[in-house]
Length: 521
Image (cartoon, rainbow, N blue to C red; front, side, top):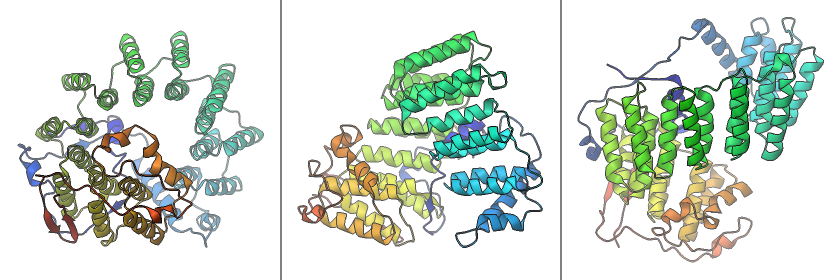
């Protein structure tokens, strides 16, 4: 019998796998490496992902609207403006299509085109000023950091005769919270919140409180979070599971475990049942802090509950065990996952690659990567990054360079994150020739490193965080920083990389066009 995952957990499980992908065409075979197959006793059973609630409305109508929107997006470019395409299909385009256009254009960072579509809408006979249109546009502008434009749309809405409602104010608050000046944004959000209380049709709802609670929890403003919870308890609006999950997630990511546990206690006292998202964020928070006793206790509670673990549950546990170099526990959890009938995803294999990277088992990490390549399926760019990082954290930058060269020869154009990772590693290892080679490849691929790129890439030298975890194993950790604006990288000392430790496995193997060479001291 297939296992079922809720819609919310499905959203978590797809956050990483939707990144840019590349494909290396190889013969198709089982992508599970031989040493992992021994951990699997039962055949894989694919997990069916279904929604807990039935969707309202006609699915066919929605798909037809989406098809039209995709058609519109395919038929405009720099030479052919979007407006001319809309005019071509003016007889069939309506408000619902424009809503979908706003979403798609927002995802592609084309907020100016959103305004063009809006102006086009206003000229059509069927257009009626509607709060929903303004709310959607304000939301898109906010996500893109265009706070002033969001404010202009709010004024435009009022000038058009529309009366703002709760959804519009929620969108406006969210838009302000996306701005870089967080203290000012939080003050603005509270101002709108108080204003909403004085307008009958704009009274704060669950969404309003959820937005504010999460924002103040992320800002570590515990007093304001408690004040908002008190306001909820005294008012007619009650906190829901999403409310508690949002606040606990923010506290957990900020390593405020005690505050997170206080919110969990409040959740239980209000008779609000935890869902799979609650369990997952608790497992992740405890795992990040390496509080494995509590993490394992939450996992046992999850197995006893009506909820079922999801792939993110196992991926989080495997990754956190790996970072603590608890290889056997990570492998045991992988075995448990497969025994329960879960099919590993790319994220699962990335978690294992990361685990073996931390545990000095680079050859096993590479075996997983090569097995994924051999499967012939598209591989997320994050998988390549995981393998490159495994090399770099073990002091093998030359092997990382060789891997990059081979996959690039198969048509891959790496992302900026890949170059940033390698630039950091090559700089720590103090290898001038690899730095030069990497910069030339970036120039060839049209990736221009800006100030932010260098600051983030070299930020490891000024911190004692994750970078310190690999200092003992990476060569040249005390190397001098590189000035991105100077030619200083050409004067760095020659290469001196640390090879695999004595007694480690020496391999020289080729799988198709991807070749790995590891050398002993």
